[in-house]
Each structure stands twice: as C-alpha cells, then as structure tokens.
Amino acid sequence: MAIDWSFDILRWIERRRHSSGTAARREGLSPAARSIADRSTVFVSRGLSKIYHMGEVDIVALRSVDLEIHGGEFIVLLGPSGSGKSTLLNILGGLDAPISGEAWFRDHNLVGASEQLLTQYRREHVGFVFQFYNLIRSLTVRENVALVTEIADNPMQPEDALILVGLDQRLDHFPSQLSGGEQQRVAIARAIAKRPDVLLCDEPTGALDYRTGIVVLAAIARINQSLGTTAVIITRNAAIANMADRVVHLADGTIARIVVNERRLAPEEISW
Ligand SMILES: Nc1ncnc2c1ncn2[C@@H]1O[C@H](COP(=O)(O)OP(=O)(O)O)[C@@H](O)[C@H]1O
Ligand SMILES: [Mg+2]
Image (tube, rainbow, N blue to C red; front, side, top):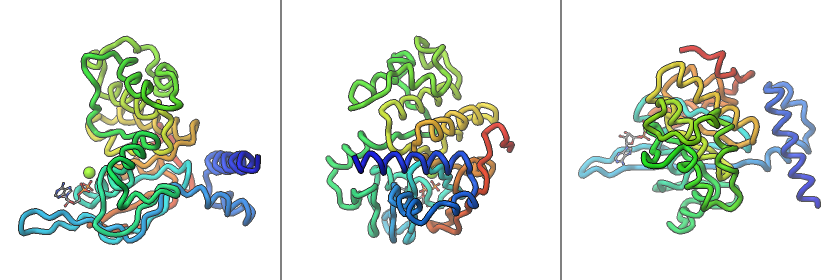
C-alpha cells in the first residue's frame, strides 16, 4: 500500500509541476516532496563517452556526458549536426553502447547489459520515433499500430493511441494515403501504444514543413502531459526548444549548457 501511496504522490507532483510549469512553484515543494520527486529520476548518465573508430581516424561523438532526466520531463536535445545528439539518445534507448561511463534507466545499468536484456528494455520501456516513419506500406494505420500492441504486456487499443494523435478518423487508410505529418503521427501512436516509460524522438519533424511539424509536436506534447510519458526530443531547431521543460545544448560531444524554461510554450505559440 505504501508503494501505491508514494506512486500517487509522484503522479501528483508531476502533474502539479506540469500544470504550474514554473521553477518558482517547483521550489515551493516541501523537502520531503522534493526528495520523492528526485526518486523519479528516469535516466542518469555519468562520464558517458563514445568514440567511433573509422580506419586510422577516431571520431569522438560524446565526451564525458553527465545528465539526469526525471519522470514526466519534456527534454529537448539541441545542437548542430554532428554534436552527438543521436549518439546520446541511442545510448539512453539501448541501441548503442558507450566506450566508458555509466548510463542508468531507473535501477537498470544499460552499460554492459547483454543484447537480450537491452532488447527486453527497449521492448518494455522505450518508444522510438525517427525522422522517417518506417511504417509498413501494405498495412493500414490500425494494423501498423496493432503490430506493436499485439506483443506488448499492457497495451492501449490501437484506436485509443490513434485518438491521442488525432488520427482516429483514418484507421483504415494505408500509409500512402496519408501526408508526411500524418504518417509521423501514426509512428508516434505506434511508439506510445505499448505505454512506454520514455518516448525518444530523433528529429521527428526533420522531414516536415512548419505547420505539419507543429501538429506532430503537439501530439508529442499531449502524450507527455496526459500520460506523463518522459519525452526526449532531438532537434536542430531552436524554436522547438521553447516547448521543453529543459533544453540540453550539445556542442562537440559535450553538454555546453542546460536551460530551464520558466514556462513551456504550447506548440501553437511557436514560430520559426
Ligand atoms: N556509426 C558511426 N560511425 C562513425 N562515426 C559516427 C557514427 N555515428 C555517428 N558518428 C559521428 O559521431 C559524431 C556525432 O554524431 P551524432 O551523434 O549522429 O550527431 P548528431 O545527431 O548531433 O548530428 C559525428 O561526428 C558523426 O559523424
Ligand atoms: Mg542525429
């Protein structure tokens, strides 16, 4: 029962944090409440480094990165091409391994985990969204999402996931009958239908025009706020960063700075 209670407190804190959205209100929490909130840390990386060996040349992709990400946060990773954003996201998502350092998901150490454990970790906890949607062309929208829900433990109905991204009117369409933005929203529905703890998005609007990009971002923001799913989004577009709780600026494989937004902008308030 105690566990349920603290879980409820955590949800309450997260909801409150999101509804207030200001650092000032956050500081208003009691020390005990803050310590419970701290226990909601989802990711911790310490001294994370990655080098790619390309023949004679070593390419340093990450240099001793320290980062903590908390449950329910909306994090933007911002930085120029080649700054290490995808490498960091892939390590957090169990798709890649560092050469040194630690990467924790809750109490699971991802570094040194077997391929089997990483596969299980990805399947149970992580939803991925990439720049290109990777939908199966011969399956309908509903079937593309059902592919995932059929193998998950506690999935949503595909229809419910598609309602969250505003595509419940397009269940029986094929990907070729949808716009790029709609296809990306199907990919988001597929990623969240298994109720992952974290949603990791690598340039989800990279192939989309401005208006379409906003609709896609709005879908991610809605999921983050209504389900409490921790979201980490890579972008090279500084305007998107205004939607985040915190913006992690990467440069040349290091975290140059982390900016806390006093107020998260709604996707409709963003222009670029
Ligand atoms: N598989 C790979 N093999 C060799 N070098 C790579 C590989 N993946 C990334 N890199 C290099 O690592 C650096 C960081 O890449 P990446 O994390 O993809 O940056 P970003 O996502 O910020 O553009 C770049 O210099 C890139 O060329
Ligand atoms: Mg990248």
